[in-house]
Amino acid sequence: MFTMLGFDKLPRWLVYEIAVPLTCLNLWLFYKIFQTFQTPFTILIVATLLSFLLGYPIRQIEKFGIQSGFSIVLILLITLSLLGVLGFNLLPILLQQLRELSDRLPVWLDSGSQQFQALDTWLAARHVPLNVTAIATKLTQMLPNEVADLPNQAAEIILGIADRLVEVLITIVFTLYLLLHGEKFWNGLLRWLPGEVGNQVRIAFQEQFRSYFIGQFTIALLMATALTIAFFILKIPYWLVFGTSIGLLALIPFGDTIGIFTSAVIISFKSVILGGELAIVALIIDQVVDNAVTPKILGNLIGLNPIWILLSLLIGSQLAGVLGLILAVPLAGSLKRIFEELMQTQATLPLEQQGDEL
Image (cartoon, rainbow, N blue to C red; front, top):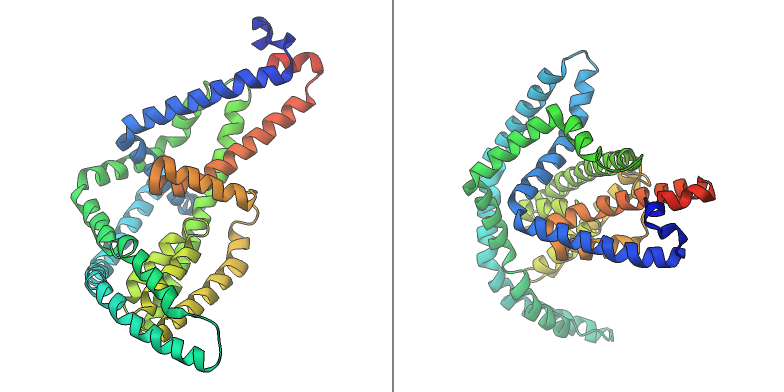
């Protein structure tokens, strides 16, 4: 195409100078479209992620000779039944603990200073140059504005899902249709891309998104279950809130570490010993999962440098909030793979054809 426009006679750097701004402009336009139609796009994205997660057990059931339609209905019924049972048994406890934590947290923040002063006295007697009270004061100034509202926000999110029942039902319907006809739908969209680009995009996104989210969901579920049980045994206050919160944050790279640190700080205002116990137990479980389970599930799937992972998380959160945080890493991994394959294909072409492909 570029040959017909005469771009093949231009220096390669000048072609990139033209292509990069046009690509950025297209991305900006797509972002504006996403902002305008955020609700339907969000429903489609969530339904697609759910179809990725449910697709794995469906394929396993089909190996026993069960037809595709029956296996999809069976998995959906089992999933909805499990969610209903868990919601009926755990959701009231979770909401109650969230409300109690919201009420108790200001009291903890006020009484925690006495514990830190006692700890300062103990450290000073042993000539340890550490002012815990000063650190606690700074955390006290920071946490009420950021953390004290988290329980209320979490409760509002959970109740908001119940209030937006229509969107939930639409998402379930979308998930069902994507499980039945998703392959044809995405192939139809990608068919408009030139040459083999559509096939490369399809393979990259399928492998990265499907494997990543199945792996991350498994890890998050394992983390939430193990931490909740451990916190319950240790009699950590609001064990269900902290266990599920850290488990959900495990869906985001480095999120579990942030969740452990935040939870330990909050509990430390009630009891430094309990805060230390929470941090130690959670870090042990986190390290066991990261070193024994995560490599077997994810391996080197994403293949991104940690710096690129952090940058993708920052950009994703800025553009789309929580949804951007969840999608940032697999999207960045997919784009990296597509770009590498395109560059490899370009390098293998004869010189006279490279201008045409550009």
